[in-house]
Length: 425
Image (cartoon, one colour):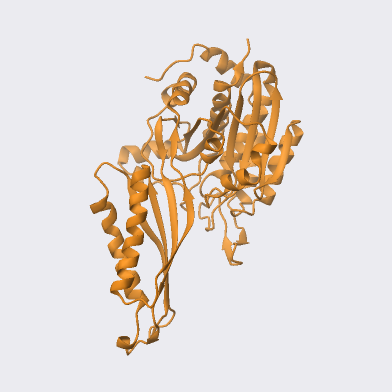
């Protein structure tokens, strides 16, 4: 039974009174969806967000840590609440078939052309936050405090929040008392979920190069085969979670890429691996990473590698651990407003860098999730036991239903902010 906010009637009336016209923002969303941008290249999206904030008389700061945007609206006495939305898209081809599907191709950081798609829902995040900002601005006589909105670049590479902080974000905007964010997921459209404690895992990624000695494929005894060494490493890594992590703890170790050679009769000189790690607990994280390095070193020694492997950390982002007290307050306002559409969260081993925006200034934070799967499709899949077959985030077929997904995201973001801003009357 969700907690009840004693002011739930007034809050519902406020949202209904000030919610902007959704058709305008449906068009805004379609436009963003059709023009996705890769991490670190969010020029068009950030310009669009900044222009909208300027139209609402926010104090606007641009090009923070790349294409990061921050807007500040001071509305009298009260706490400072920071809302965050991420902007970047993924290097993959969209196959949803929707009329506004992306057909964009962009060059990545290495100059390679890639198809680009908003397959993670960041276009919903941006649209919902712009519309929620409009709602809160229109309702400014109903609350007091300072509203800060941050449009963050490069979340998919887990370095955008740190980039904004390192570029002086908190020298430009006031330090927040609370930090909030939301994420659309494979849940029934219209539903919302918020939970205390562990929400998302820490993420670490490693680029590994194995050094062998190349030669003719017909004379392997004259070579040191990096492919054999790499294959042994990938196989041995699978024993870390099953044999070194205590049952009940969460850890994932994956090899997402193995690249070496180009011809069947040539044993190459090097092999490259890309490894990914997800954990919650700090001690487990430390031990898993140490085990990965131990296995790489040992297999290289066993395979007679000509020199030590190169192991470089390419991504490192902390776990997202929601603040218990804030969650209890949100359960009150969300529970009163969304009622039966408040659902229990499913465990997730995805990762985010959002928490850095809070921990950098010692502020508590919460991220909640909301659903994007068409209600009819969800109900049919649930009845048939095929929920796992529905496309989720990072699938080329991920196409959240426009409504009620957008309205839910707008309302949740506005209610989240109003939970902590000083409400008048």
